[in-house]
Length: 193
Length: 192
Image (cartoon, rainbow over all chains, first blue to last red; front, side, top):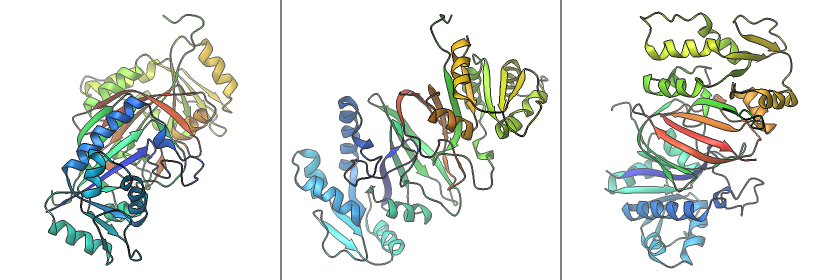
């Protein structure tokens, strides 16, 4: 069975909106406000995650956001991301922006469940907040990787939405990344476990 | 020893779900109860504190500790917590609560940032503030120096947030620690 991993950059208060500031959110750009050392350490972890992943799973906006970003880059990390198989969840998208991508148009829960059965390795989700909410609500997420930025924004779209019930987690790992980032890894615990 | 020019620090500590709530939609926080290991750190952090600043609801929750048993049959951690709590001064900010039901406690009607600044300047020991509403006001007023967040391994999906709405707070990570039971402690300095 494939394992769905949400790998997200968040503020301390769980905001994921407009990390680079290009969407015009007044509090946007927080993702960029870390030092070089932190950025280097962050990159090592993200690259390792990409190397270990079998595929990426994305929402439409994230396919566009990351596709635009990475297709023009070169280097090992870019090569890895650009060449990986990708699955984009969207009922409207005709042509994915990013490379080697397949659109999943049907019911999200059914499609992602099918994908988990079809693949054997890590299926990593970047960004894709709406998709992340759906996956969490339907207990389709196996692992959560949170890269916590040294800021509380006080407003904005959050990674964790309202859920119908509590979701129990098991902490797998925690580390400081560089000077100011905190990287937390959790397994989602299912009722049957 | 604190020199005359050094101000006391105002510190906000909270135990929250991973999605940032100190209590859930049912107003419960049983899932946030610290185990012995977390309580030991909580006690170490509270021990040097001279004064607790409380909003009414937080005070009404914490005043339990005034009368809590410290007999030998109680676990060491909770005994310590009760003793530490009782030894500190408390200031309760409330317009409705008239009198305190604990020793070393005084009431104030309004939260006045200028008076908090004087308190920081004149205190030889650090000061903590809670619950979330009062702390949020203090954070917005630029009064809080440090924050300890204990994150529990659970998503509760809604409730009361640990951190205030509409306040932008740049931070500096001071320490990070994981506990056996899966709680994460993040200690931040609030940057000006």
